[in-house]
Length: 226
Image (cartoon, rainbow, N blue to C red; front, top):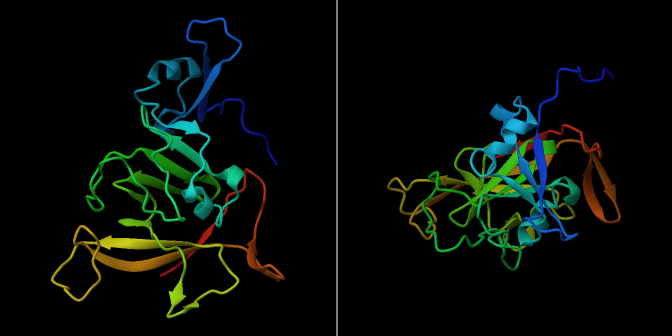
């Protein structure tokens, strides 16, 4: 495989450390994601953009949301970013429910309210933003991670032995359909979309799994079922 050209030195992440003016051995390291439109800038110019244009800070994070995403992607390949001055605990929760609390903000549907956290699956080119207590997809319009991630028909699971998928729910404004189920904000709950990794399907004693490239640089595809 041909090596990258020597002129291709785009900056994707900016790692810096701060001693806060002390001589202590403990040093705080911060890692910020560089937006695509700024990646061609030299690193010394990017340093001046921290807190303004560079607002997504990579953090270590653990919550029930990670447990859901780990069904789809390996933990070491899931990136979690917090916005400037946002608390890394804002995506806490219980019981595996993706209806994550986000302070005192109210549900404003699919409006572009300020988000506090971003969950990124870069190998699959998938990202979810925490806004108004829901994890909204950036790739599928007006869709968010469904609170219940199990596909159930009556009392039985639709896909027994297989859990490697994500369920998205589409948000739609209510338009005279009074018989449709509604959410807390009076909006109609739209159709479901199931995302499954594309790859070879294998069956074992543990169930059914999709096998794909395990390298960090892999570019993986997603199969969509509506």
